[in-house]
Amino acid sequence: DTQHRGDLLPPYPWPKEEPPFGSGCPLGPFAPPPPTLLPGEVGGTHGTSELPPAALAETGPPLGTLGPPAACPLAPMEHVIPNLLISPHMLPLTDLEIKFQYRGRQVCVLTISNPHGCRLFHSSLEPTQEQVELFGPLTLEQVRFPATDAIPNEKQRFYTHQLLDVLDRGLILELQGQDIYAIRLCQCKVFWTGPCATHCGGPNPIEREKKTKLFSLEGFLNGLILFQKGQTTTPPPFEIFFCFGEEWPDQKPKEKKLITVQVVPVAARLLLEMFSGELSWSADSIPLQISHPDLKDKMVEQFKELHQLWQNQQRLPPAQPEPGPAAGPWVLPPGSLPQ
Image (tube, rainbow, N blue to C red):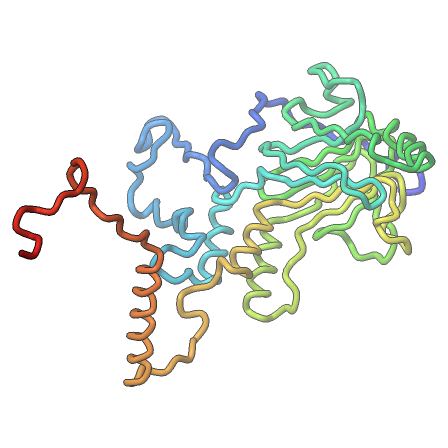
């Protein structure tokens, strides 16, 4: 890997191992962690409602204000985003959507929820505590590349196996604060494009065992503000694209690449949909032009009500005659015949 000076750099120093976290996310992707207070402070070790009003005001608006309330218009975009920048714990980057594609055909889609990140690999070896230098921390979500059984072409399947065989150590996607980093451990070369990629006009490799920044939530929020104010014509990018074993970007489309992986920070996609899509509409966002009703309009409304009543009557079942008392043959009462 001397072409990109990957093997000449010192190995990435792994941080101190922390206790493993569960892969589930019971509070959801937008649930903030409980505030931790030092012993002796108000509220004990996990204070909640005992905080003074001044401290609550510094943490920004409650999480429910991200979406439009039932009877109130949406808060201005310029007020919500700075509060997220001040209190980044309100929007943790714990959820990553990962899409695997083999030569343009999608073979697997999954979403991982882990506060540390994940490792993309293909191997029969499971990481252990003694092999942290080889496979990374055990706290990472272990995501295995999908099998090649669905590849119809034999030649494509052969070359795909050639790349998967050198993906034992894998590619690490590390979550650190509000940023996403990549650390390439595998022998297979990895190229990428994304929000933090430098636009050099040619292939963009990830150097081996070197920490590479892929995504910054702060930069995305700043770009979202500019887009909402009309200072930019396109929304900020947030999708990260990896190409394994082949140079990228180049003259070939990504659908022709053997192994590609797309990573989407779910929080960034939800923010873009919230402030640029239907969730950002308020009750007065579209001024509807309707005249006041006159006498003829009121007559039409009455006709519509009468027609609706008539239709309801037609749907009712016909009334059944009430059954009379059980008796024998019918006999005229006495005195009813003419004399």
